[in-house]
View 1 (cartoon, helix red, strand yellow):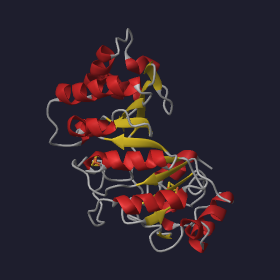
View 2: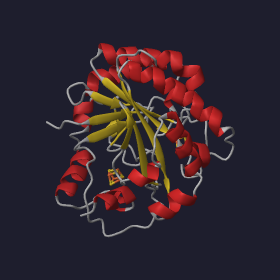
View 3: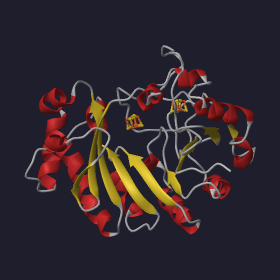
View 4: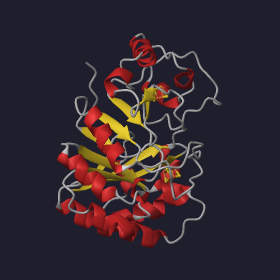
Length: 291
Ligand code: SF4
Ligand code: SF4
């Protein structure tokens, strides 16, 4: 039987920002219903204990985020969340103290990625204040700057990130510049339970992208699967448009979907180091894993 390190559950397809590097979804705007979320958890329970509450939308837009966390806890899941952090002032009381909340990733690159962003200091201060509280109940905080575009040194020395990094250095009383410690692909520990993670900007896979020979590997359906806000099951968190539609969890049991023909073809293909899906042959993430 397949088992997953994590399953992504998109609780809304809507985002309050429009980052330049994030193509907007053409899927219907929706919020997951409480009963549908509970149904999904029951379906995936035999396969994982870790859920990630996003694929494309902004999870803190969900008005019932507190209830979703409570249900996750009742059903024995640990929750990881990735947010742009702009709604923390409004949503923090729904998050603090929730036992299910294992980790929150703050996509700080969204500040510079969204053309209308204002007041970097205010934005970061709200997030830092929240983080100070959240770590007390054991939640891990990870700050992400996934917007490096050139070679690491040039980028960090000259870019807009320096300003954000300065705020982080001040907040955590660091006596070094964060870029001095950067190792791509691994986080830097700032203090107990708090990390910063710098990465190159990644392109969402798209059917419009050029195709390569399809050689390579991906952990989709080996360590992860994802479920979009309307219940569509896809193999990975990068299929934000539901191109590799494996079935709908509200119509077909999850157990059948992940053992279906399309799912098994994808899985067996990667066992042979071959991407059988067109989207996978156009996906930079697969190329990143190498052959
Ligand atoms: S990158 Fe994140 S914050 Fe930016 S538009 Fe996409 S989902 Fe929203
Ligand atoms: S290769 Fe890319 S699109 Fe295909 S399953 Fe893996 S992450 Fe998803």
